[in-house]
Image 1: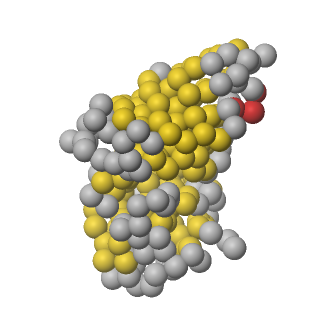
Image 2: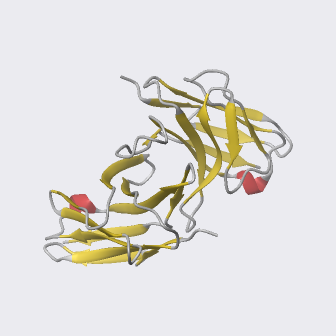
Image 3: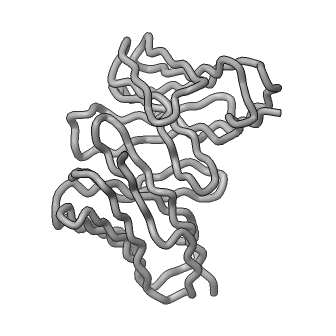
Length: 109
Length: 115
């Protein structure tokens, strides 16, 4: 059974601090996706990572993929309140998306 | 450009009732799918379709039926609602399984409560 595990599940961080969310997956896949979800809202695509060593950055968020380690990271730099949301990673394989359980991020002043 | 449209946004059903959740996309995407989101469990795939006339089961298909008669529409049917089906349901689409650099686009969700 394919598993996608994220940690931490909950993250409370102060504004201005840095932190990393980890996504481990149990199958061979070179497609890894990161999504953001605000409370009561839909999922918004953040990053699509398609190869080993891929790194993408958008504002204060940077995502990377290590397919050999089956690990993706989402790094947050100098957090601001607007980044408060739940972040999901997902693997696409065999015509299916497999989602992690999500990391609920709260940025506090 | 409407993207992925789900209806209704909210629904309350009694145990044993049936209903259909609607999903439509206007992006000519081949791939469509239904997920349910429950607290602490992420999103779990119910059913998916890789094109009109083709559907397949996901991780949690029991109690749900789908069909794909057109490229645009992918309705999800609850045959006999149970309290365990209380959840938030998301429909998603993407261009096609062979296009690597494309993410899935999600609808706004349907919040279903079964009493």
